[in-house]
Length: 255
Image (cartoon, rainbow, N blue to C red; front, side, top):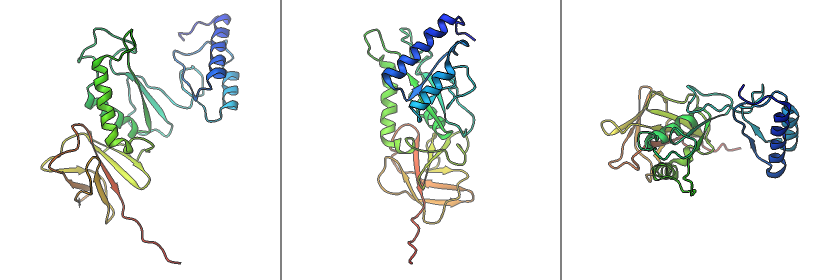
């Protein structure tokens, strides 16, 4: 463990957590770099849950309990039943790095694809920025945040409040989420021969397919186990595109 193990430090750390909980009523207790063994952690956690039954605790206290895991600069390979949160900076630092340039900061398209991949596997993305001493955000990082925000304005319905589908992906360039009756397919690659192919999806008859960012439905057909969607002449964005596939409403049953 990397945390100091003296009784004095344990009491100091405990006092900090109790003050944070009392003053700010946090929804999440997010600890880093383990916790001293001589602490009153079990009692602090019990008191926190009793006061905030919906509160969450991460897995970095070095204890046997946690509501979610926090892989750093990493993502899981598949869907996990338990929620998780990938944490990383836009660059390789969690603070300001004055020599940071394009080589060190994730590209906008890769950032968007990373968010999609994490979401498709039941995860959240905790994204760090490193402000300058005056509090301003470096231009290179601001550029990435603006690109992500612009993409979410068009495609956010497939990310926010969504859930994983039966599988997260269909090959390296397709990811899935679902919300209500709708299945969302994220396409990382541009259409080939004027069409998008969504592998491994058997669509019900009468399904409506929409391309987020474009008004109206798009034409599609079933080819074996794939859904093939006609691509518009002009695509609504330079990064990953999102298809929304919704079954036709069921006819009302008369009593």
